[in-house]
Length: 68
Picture 1 (cartoon, helix red, strand yellow):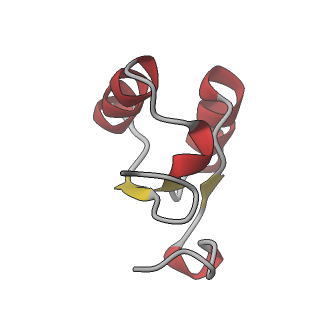
Picture 2: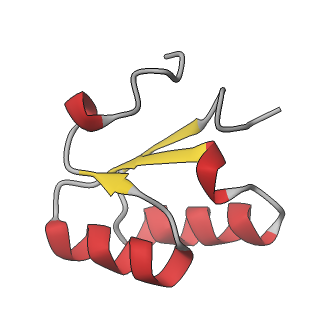
């Protein structure tokens, strides 16, 4: 099961990534059970504002407590 301890990694928060994310969240995925890498600052803000998730600019900023 996906959780904050074993999150889903979404690489790319563009329109397709946001559509996938929205579907997963509507199906019950908790916002802390997904980590998002999106290099564009404007898209990161949009994802945070629209979905309450945290997106980072690069893989070096991912939560190191989560397993690969």
